Length: 227
Length: 219
Image 1 (cartoon, rainbow over the protein chains, first blue to last red):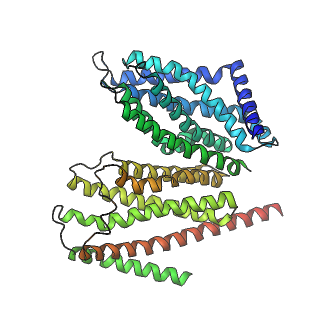
Image 2 (cartoon, helix red, strand yellow):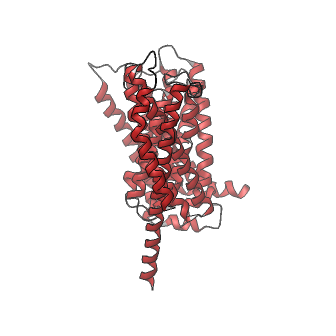
Image 3 (tube, each protein chain N blue to C red):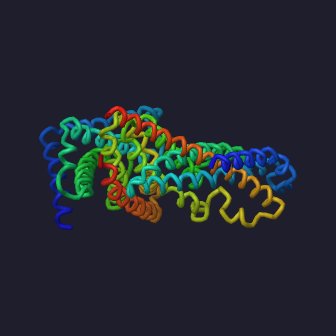
């Protein structure tokens, strides 16, 4: 078990080291996420005011769109340098490699969300500081569920020709339960009279889906990645 | 096998041909009247939609974890049938909902999760068609994620308070409505089994031809 986490740690550190040196995925994903928020602002703002209760939806759309981009990019880098094969040839547990990739992606997305959440709070006057713990839990669990499936799918699609279009096509239908829970939970916290019990219910549901998605992804990564 | 398929196809065709008369003879439901009769097609296709998803998921698991090459053919056949029967479900549902609820569609858990499952099948088939070599394994991974939705869809109406009628409706139907329902269910099931058989066999033969072709190439 110790070696499992050590391998995961090394894979994650490798990804983050590459990222710290080039900052490619972080900067492009961040800029894309901000653009998504702005596009939505222009689409729905009327007479200088945004309609009520849209902040949660926009936040999660931005997270899922930019998350898809980040997943595609991190694996595109592995494919381009033909390093994924080397990674898979390593005499170690495949699920540990998956876990390392997932952790690297989660840290990246957490950084993006740290910019995204204040931005949405600012532009749509959402009370992001009213329940910081609950909001952080919703974002962390929602991103985990989304990225758990996304990392698996992006990894399997590395060898497929039309991977850029197929990743969102496969990923969104599967992860929509997580999206629904994230949006509804966040909306419960952002509304005029926050509903803590409701947010708690959706957090519980997110834990449920996360458990299923992570288990299934760890389980299928090995056979799916075997050539 | 071929004889059995012919028998099943003939039986289901005959039964589906007389089904309109049997449905017509069934009593009118007091509150919804004529439009309730769409239920005799909606229920069988919905159940077979979930059955198809389960077959696809289980076969994909066998293919992925136990390296059963034939299981992939069954998974693909089940996915295609799931798309067809899911489409029937998603079309007949709104026809009824328009009269019963006044709207074509509501975002309640049963409807949302059914639509999602149908989307997952569409994505699965897109992957199988455009994924190129190796897409059989990737599809199998995807199908496992799709299968999670099946129990969720089934229990959703009993867990949440939704507009969609609960699963307790069917066992408590009066006999004169139950007979046409199970008659249609039998016809649809035979159609499903036959199509599944034929499609899987086609896929197995295609895989065999491909293997022979590759062997020829190497020789």
